Length: 500
Image (cartoon, rainbow, N blue to C red; front, side, top):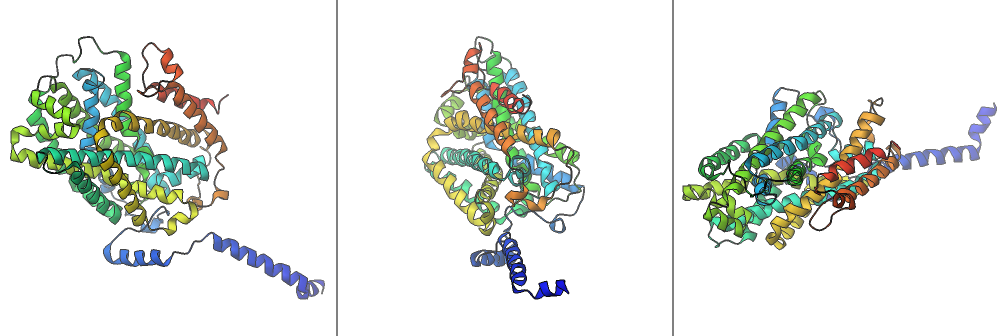
């Protein structure tokens, strides 16, 4: 009887109704309704095949079927994305900047490239496991808000890589046209092709990478046959033997060129089934990237060793690095121009993932409202930005590669150390993860410990860095300062924060 009276009491009914309304409002706030513009884009996508999915997790029922061909596709994606001209430029710095001979530069390049490729291969495995993009998935390790900082840094990294690819394409077009076509034209060509494939989405990117590597590998093989006789693989570049600092600095540069893909590596595999075996995926990804970047780095080293004895190459290198790549096909005359254009198009293979991931990172920066903005719109904004930056800064390609890109690798090493620390040390018992709370800050870790580790890691990196514009006190104290100290001190400081 008392229960019946309470049920009829207006105050009790009012409190019950208010509780229900509050609960409903809370539920509604967690689901953001798509805008009219978003619904229009989705309708167009159903007709055209455009991928509109952004940072939202990919449900299992929308994943690809589990087949053995999946591992081949993983291998080919990284192979195609790394058989590119910008990685040849990295190899040039071994002899021309650090004064290494062929043998020293080749050993350093192989070691640095594969070390960075292992990190990319490991982070790639989280795509099928979680169905989330890389920096969305790492919200479970570093927290919701700290991940936004990493999104900003990764956008800058991807913009830097895109600028290198754009400028390289412009330089090649300028060279094969004998200066009749401006560098800006080549920049726009690379940017537009990259924009189209990255905007359409991952499905066409997977299809593109499945066959593009054949042309890329063929053209690089032609370069070996055409320019290889001018490679100097026996004599040293400098009269004095290279120091350990020079060797380690080149290892650091090659390592940086590979590991910078780690914060984006899972973005391209969220459509793969969760049954994908991590160890096989790790081998496929790291081998594909490692082999491709080794070949391109060795080509760059070979070209650099031939510059002192080949006047044509020397003059081209004084003009631009892209001119050197184009001139290496000069003995083939008109067919050489075709091969140079293929090298230009290889930059597209590297630019597509840059453009794709940068658009996703822009969505992540916008927080819970990011998914309401179509990914193609953000991708288009990102392409416009890096195209304009490339046109303005096309005279400074050397400075971008020497200074900006290695600087971007500093934060990636620290970020990777924090993630691995969380996975292998602090969360090994928590194997069951609710990947559906990716956009709920209250259900994700606060990330205070990860933020402290990141700050300590940055301090260690600053103390140990050695660049033309700044040398840290620890690096200055060494008899031969080297930039690889950043990896050691940055990682060590990250881990020491949790082990006082």
